[in-house]
Amino acid sequence: MKIGVVGFGYWGPNLVRNFQSTPSVDGVVCFDTSEKRLQVAKQKFASLETVTRYEDLLRRDDVEAIAIATPVSTHFSLGMKALEADKHVLLEKPMAESGAQCEQMVDLAAKKKLVLMVDHTFIYTGAVRKIKDMIAEGRLGEIMYFDSVRVNLGLFQHDTNVLWDLAPHDLSIMDYLIGQDPIGVSAIGAKHFNDMEDIAYLTVRYNSQLLAHFHVNWMSPVKVRKILIGGSKLMVVYDDMEPSEKVKVYDKGVDIKERESIYKVLVQYRTGDMWAPKIDLGEALSLMCNDFVDAIKNGRRPTTDGRAGMKVVRILEAAQQSLRAGGTMVNLGQ
Image (cartoon, rainbow, N blue to C red; front, side, top):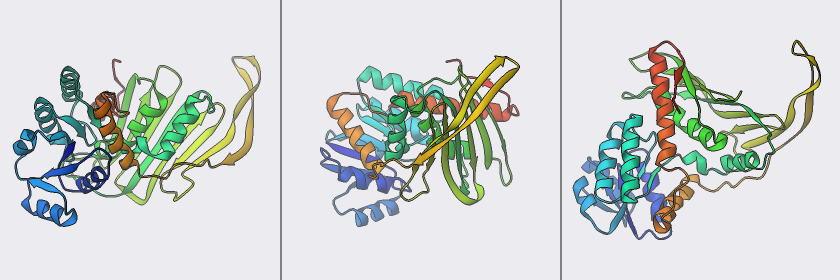
């Protein structure tokens, strides 16, 4: 098959490079509204085909799938047109501007039996997959909290706030690892330079005692990409900035020594070993591209399908509503 890549800006070149090296992909055809960017694309990738109109890409019978790497405001219109043209679709994160838009695309893809996928790349990292295996095996025990920090200096966006820019990464990781539907969302934030929040704190609640918290910030003096997961048996720190030991497992926690009454509980602290499991350091985007193509070939659901993307957008949508209401808890109505 051939893959169409829409948008040759920040992420488009990475998609072109990986799809060109994906088995079963015979070629990549690129569309961008900028002639200059298309010229750069041809210079960078000698075998790349380009078109100057989106409709020309959709008309080509040899292009079976479309990967869309454009601003989120265009995802819905471009994605729906591709699905209506019977093309499988891969969308960059976040999937769309609203849950309703996501649902329309999910329903149309299901009706036409097409693969609809969202590029939540971090799900395909060796680190996240290792943590998923440990949770699935029950090694962490009951998950009590999920705490995420994703901060850096810039890049300020003109069309979206820091929540929609940075939080989708860790929200998708949370959804993949936890495997539960959240019941409520609250968020607070601040705008220092324009009408977009540049710092925000997001809390996600579940039916259980599990609590998830996210800190996103465009004004940090340092770049931090860290997730802490607290289990009743083991605890995990995932630091994406670490060059090799990205995942560290701690045999630490709290055990109940004696419970005399609801008012008097004696606890003891457990401090054991720390170790860094071996993880696959292969490129996550390459695995994601392979998953997309394999799902098309075999008619199966990809790991990060449209419903997974829709879950993330619904949380972001509720968080935006909470921001406007000063941090009020918004029910997700799962």
